[in-house]
Length: 77
Image (cartoon, rainbow, N blue to C red):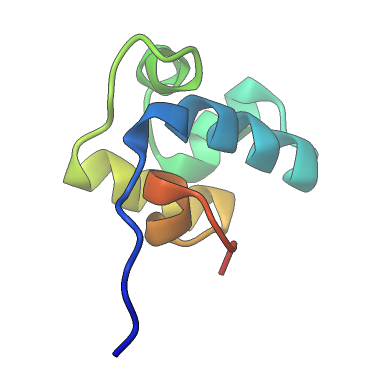
């Protein structure tokens, strides 16, 4: 049986920044792709707020990464 490692939500902001670099996105374009208002996107990007389930889903779809990776790091899927 595979043991799952615990999620570490403290690094969501850094993982969002990583995806901006990987996808070569501006903050405005990333917020648009995630279908989030830019001020809301920026609160996640700068670690001021933690996204809820709907926010994680928007971010993962818009940035092209898995919600699991966004939440906990590890291997990107």
